[in-house]
Length: 68
Image (tube, rainbow, N blue to C red; front, side):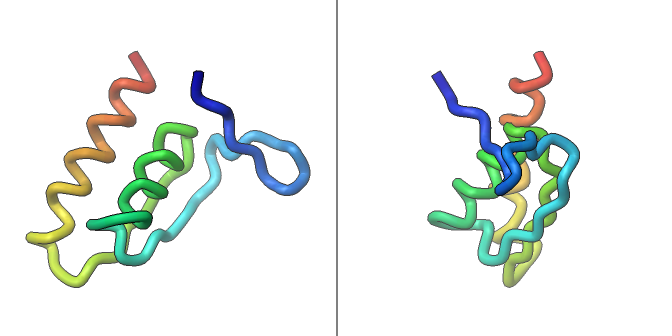
C-alpha cells in the first residue's frame, strides 16, 4: 500500500505545486512521479527538452493511472 504524503501540518498535498530540478533522472524523477501521484501539480526542470520527454511521459502515465 502506498502511503499518502502530508505537509508539515498533516494536510494532504493534493492541489499543491512543486518545482523539481534535475527531474529527468534519479531521485528527482522519482520525486516528481510520486508527488504527481499524490495530486501535486509538478513542474520539472531539466537541461533539455529531449532529456525531459521520457520523464514527462512516465509522470503523465502515473497520473493517469492514479485517476482511473
